[in-house]
Image (tube, rainbow, N blue to C red):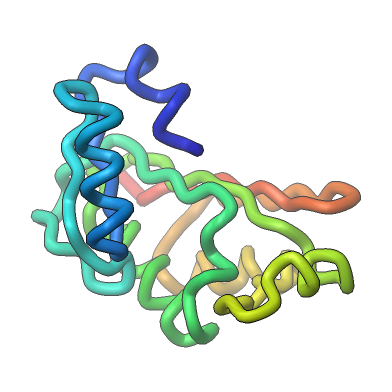
Amino acid sequence: MTSTGLPDRTVSLAGLEIDPVLAVRLRTRFAGDLRVVDGDATAMPLPDKEFDSVVCFTMLHHVPSPAQQDDLFAEALRVLRPGGVFAGSDGLDNRLFRLQHLGDTCVPVAPDTLADRLASAGFTGIDVETGRAMFRFRAERPR
């Protein structure tokens, strides 16, 4: 869980959760350390330019369509302050990855398309690294 390692490394931490049951669990587990916001990452109920960084680890494939993933990228840009960083990782599309997500939303992001998609959303300084089973990325909101 992404939230586990971050409270000790930040001054202020917010987590966005679309599932109301999981939001309650997060509030209980991280009371006082994490501001849990109920909402959808494709239409974040958050002010413009509020955050220095936005992270999304192993969740992009749960966004139901490439168009909605692009909406998420645009929203990440919107809530970042100028010079802010958007970073994350996700699994690579392969048979094992698909088997692990049977019966669940699974729309893998092709890492070779990610830099262009992030640039289209307005990000700069984009870096995408692909490993054996995962990819990671980092991009910046222009100053």
